[in-house]
Length: 106
Image (cartoon, rainbow, N blue to C red):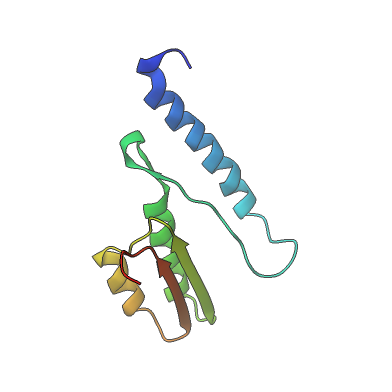
């Protein structure tokens, strides 16, 4: 880091490099099984909006594919905003959703 004023640029560059590394790994076929775990980052203040792109792409792809799919989405901070809720509800019947989100209620 070059000082406190360069924090945002340095942090963004670090996050982008991390994302690029995982994006490269995600394009490789899994060595075993049919499951991939891909971390995604959302840091809007730094201009990093990977979560928005990733969730949007996931919802589009599983809805377009004729292949039966099970989609598990979870995060301690995850909450489906209205646009995603509509896309999940409107998805074809061959998509089985499991969504776990934080909640103040049990």
